[in-house]
Length: 261
Image (cartoon, rainbow, N blue to C red; front, side):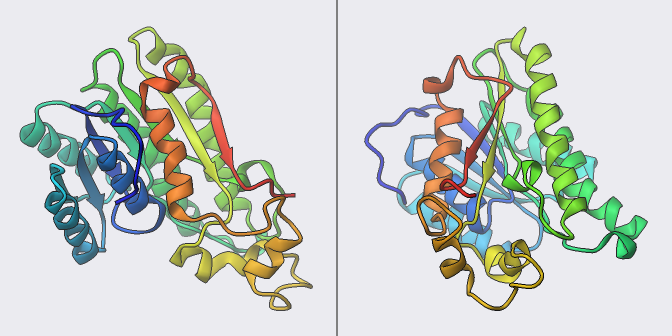
């Protein structure tokens, strides 16, 4: 688990979708280290999710792994129902489930559109809806955008659009949720050392440059910090937005991109 200097979430219950791997797993671990009981939502990585829950429980955290495909609102509803049945409350949603997509305009199909938006956009909207319905004042919702929402990348239109929609959702939902004392924000990660980055990272380069430099070396000349983020560094942003330290911050997207340019 990530070492932290305080327990800002002691007594809270957090639901983390996409919590079995990558950034989501780091977020689940960080929120647990901050004192929260954690529900780890997963779709296909059952063993990894249950292994993470076992690790957190061994450290004294109350953790539970539950399967739910966020592309299906009924499964999302069941996830929150089970979380409530187990812990009796929900204070934090960290929505980390997502899918990547690269494809030229002429190759994008309606099925591609439906799949990407079902997970990245609709899935996050209904996760926020289900979470907010069970939250009281002080609730925290943190969705996941991407630096792609505000940067032009070749053949990345569909993914970028799905993430830009998340930033618009966060901005607009802040008004109505703020009346209930619930904040909603998003994190926009940059290049992060995950299996998804290893698989798709080259796609962020200009087509004429793809394959000429490994992603870590490419970032040395395209990022102020000159490296990939570690998942734990991105998780720190979610933990901040989920804590009382961000009590007066809502409707915003926090870019964690290492100064990408």
